[in-house]
Length: 177
Image (cartoon, rainbow, N blue to C red; front, side, top):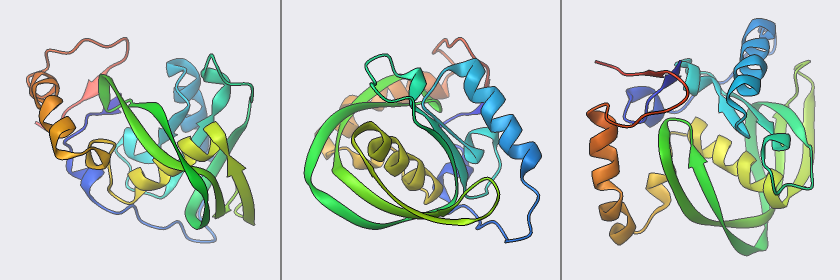
């Protein structure tokens, strides 16, 4: 089940993972759930766990020329490179909503990999876009927060329908109430 947008977990900063944490079950659950949902991003927050872990898998994007996949633990963007590029994004916790967001084309990220080894890498294009999306989610920032006031007003009806449980999905949603 995917925790729905509006849940308190999406408005808090995820807890950092300790260097001796056993994340094997969580990582397996992320990968299996992501495989079932065929979505490029799945974070621990989607599973109602407030830890700084997410999975990116670009093979689920039809127009992607990359099959990049990776687990990111305690990720931080250390540098960005212009230009800003607009692109469409969606969010599992906000089903049936797609928005255009401008993001840096290239980023440098420091993170721990699946083996909790420190990594620093440069990502660009779709990988950069979805990694930025994941990091923002871990920091309590949603794609709605990225929108200007006019666009926020235009998605208000969609959010209301989601709150009223009137949006159908091919996956189960978990609500706080």
